[in-house]
Image 1 (tube, rainbow, N blue to C red):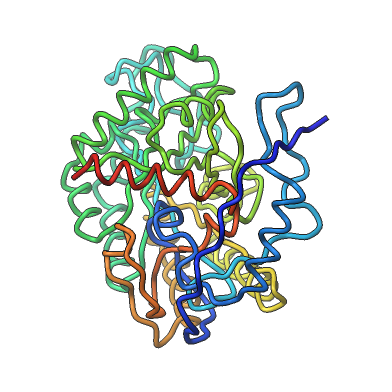
Image 2 (spheres, one colour):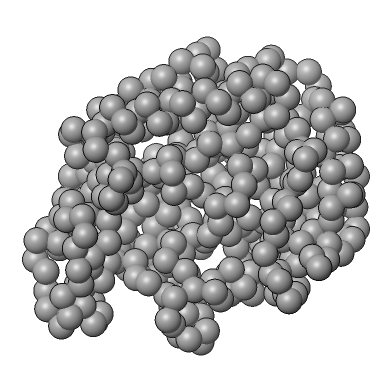
Length: 395
């Protein structure tokens, strides 16, 4: 039977006052969910509803005989209050993997076979697959810069899931990410499958990923999305101790907390459906129109649910070598303009939000600052202490 141990509750912070009603918030740095938890919230009833839902359920501990949570928030889902009282939060993720994929030049046993124009490709044991390598190179040489221009011209924020070894091979791209103010979360050391790795081997790679990432990007990653995981990935991410959130989950449309390796760990779920990877899978998207239609339908449903009082989050997964192609990126551009139309008249928040300062100015593209408190008010106090201690160490 699933056990949900009770944890200490922290009181909600006072309201910052009434702010202009808005319809959409576009998520930027995911670590802001913890740093700025609850700032800008104005709906006390929503806060109470969220607290009561967690009082009934508690936190799920994955270290039990049946370590799967099939209940989640259950029938009475929380009512998060997004900045500006937006109806929906949208997160755009660019997976930067090119140069970190399987390749014998990288010491791997075979060539890459996953997520490319060669649907159904098989790994070539002990051999280079130069066509596959070239497809990945397109992502770093062309696709990345096309996406970078598209988002920066619209002043829209992005979270990057960056493979450390790939980042190290293209410092110009990393510099551009930092220039744009994008969050760069960890996507592991290499873009390889970890399902058969020993726990110790995967831990070693994770530690090396953090080391390289910090050296290349200038700051350590605060989020982790391994992607091609093992059964140990979440526990290793929690035990590492420096990640404010983990993203190797697809179980919800709201962030949630779990007890992992004795740690209260924030989970920010990702997506494999609203994702350009389906251009490279059987029965996926065959045209950009299909991609655009799926994204718009997903957004419209979540927006309608937000109007009804059940605001959620939409994640959009992107890859430089896939959606960066001209015939696909046109659909992404149309979707960006579509969702940006819901945020007309807003202004972007300053980067000071990432260090914990509050603002009541409703921005065009901002962090989803209310997620941590809305998802787990009982564990917020501990998280704030962790964040505070880390900022002191950095300084």
